[in-house]
Every structure is written in structure tokens, then in C-alpha cells.
Length: 339
Ligand code: ASP
Image (tube, rainbow, N blue to C red; front, side, top):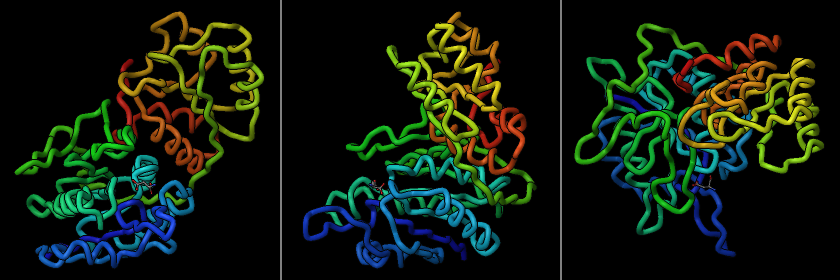
């Protein structure tokens, strides 16, 4: 009999309204009570609840590491892992877990819901049941899904390609730069060509994150003082969110600030403010200068993947050049190199 490990971290799925009508997390018993079908499944479930359970806006790197350790420690005993998690920061958690858990051969599926499980129109039941079903699916004794994913509204996405795009619809997530991995209708339709296979790799668990990462989101009219404040803050790397296919102003004063920070050993990673498409350094005159001074190419990475990949690489390497080398490489299916 297959055995799935459920990690309950909190989120709307298990929330109730307190006396003031505010949604607060509640324990797993609430989910069990509202999902009697759990006892009808033909696979075994073991539940681990985090203490405390949280709204995912309170997520931290320490909790990410605790989650990853829990998977490492239980990896051999279970066929798959389902993490119940708030949707707000789910894409960050899915991304960071993909980096911490290298060579996964079992599914790690994050899910949650937009309406609590106790509500009549809840999306929690569909999401959780489909996540469990996919997490338990094997072919010839091998897990079909061998990566960290997000299941929401009948779609399974690669975790490090996804972002929360809608806070009002059941369709909360999208991954426009990578195909959907599974569509759940009457049948589960697997997009086999898009799945990661880790062959006979062993699980390599990484145990460190360094969150000295900053963000510079550009806009026309941004002041040089603001840019300087970000670049000169106590960080090792900066994710710079640029226009279109990776473009910025060509103002020499701006480029000089970037050059100065790079000269001090900081990594500046260029990702686009557009949710679809990729950075193409040097395509326009407005990104030519960036390439010349050593700004790094984030290609089509999501913001969530870029931030957590840098935390992971900085945890791995003291040497900034190694961080810079690996951040431009596809290491867990999180980016597509286009040059
Ligand atoms: N605020 C909630 C959370 O992220 C939202 C959700 O679960 O969808 O924990």
C-alpha cells in the first residue's frame, strides 16, 4: 500500500474565522472533519502539523529548512509528499524546496485553497484530493512526478516556474514560461515531455540558505539615491527587475552605480517585470551596456525562483563568482537559456 506524508503548514485551507471575522489558521482536525473521504483512499496517510501553523505571509527561511529536513528525514519511508500551505508565498516555498532537494525521485506537491475547507463552495477538497492522487501515482514502481510542484485548480505546475497571479479566483497560479505538467479533468492528463526525470540520482539535501539578497525594481523616474541605497545595502546579490526583455535606462550615472556595485563583488541579476518571455541581454541598445559591465542574465526565471535560487547558491558558496556562474545555469528546470 502506498504511503503519503502530508505536511500541514497552515494557510486558508485550514482556516476559520475568529470572533472578529478574521481568518486565522486552525489545526488539521478541521481538515479531517471536513474531508471524510480521506479515510476511503486506498493509500495510507501520515500527517505532520507544523507548530505553530501559519498564514504563509509569515514564512521564513528557517521554516523552509525545517520543511526540507522533514522531507529528507522521511524520504525513504514514503512514496510522496503533499505540503498544505497558504497560497500567498507558496511559489517561494516551492522554488526554494526545488533547490534544497536535489535529485528528487518522488513527488513533493504543494497545495492549499482560496476558500477554507469548511466553506460550502470551497476549492480545498478538489485541490487536496488531486494533489494526493498525483503524489501517489507510480508507473512500474517509479514515481511519475519527480519534482516540486504546485497543484491548484486542476493544474499541476512546476513549482519554480509558478507564481500567484490571482487572489480572487480559484485559478490562483500560473506558469506562463513553462507548460502545465498535469491537467486534471475526468482523467489526469500527464504532459510527459515536460516532466523532470532524475534517473538513478541520489537525493542530495542542501542545508543552508543565505538571505542577503536585495531587490531593485526599476521605474521611469526612479531616483539615483534610491538605487544607490539598494545597491549599497548589506546584500551579496540584487535581483534587478527590468523592462521588457531586460532593458533599462542608458543614463551613464545609473550604469556607473551598477558598475560600482559589481566592482565591490555584488551580483546583479537581471529578470524582467514581464511575466511572459525572457531577458535577452544585448537585444536592444538599452541592455547592451548591462551586458558589458557584467550584469547577470536571469532569462525567464520567475521573481520567486530568482530570489530563492540566490539564497540557495549563497548558502552553498562563499565565492561570489561561483554564485554568479550557477545562477545563469538551469539547475532544477527553473530557466530556459536562450543564447
Ligand atoms: N493568506 C493565506 C496564506 O497564504 C492565503 C491562502 O492560503 O491562500 O496563508
